[in-house]
Figure 1 (cartoon, rainbow, N blue to C red):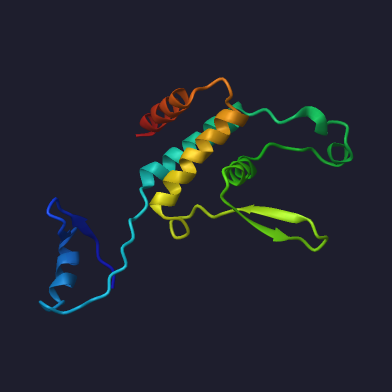
Figure 2: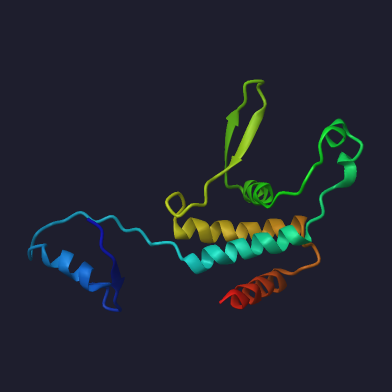
Length: 158
């Protein structure tokens, strides 16, 4: 069973919908139940994160040192927004480290899916990603300017 509740100023919780109220009505007065408190993720904030990633990706110019290498001669090397997002996430400190078969360490970005990351952790990730982007990609931006531009982008989508 799953239900949603809204916290009130007096520290009590009230059902968020009629279905939630019906579920709560099945609990007898004085009966003990176990609840797991999980704040659902904010979809608007999730969209804001991707607006930030897209803004930085559009601004980012990869280094030219790959030209003339064995890789660039065999196949074109392309920019990829998903790889960019993963790299920024890793640089923000949200990764798992594992050994590869050859002994090298591989860093894999942690999942940012709704089921894998709480709202609180996602907010921390967002702030750290802002820092990475300011320090590595959009170096001419202040934090305020970058946040403002992302806010403006999100408002344009609404």
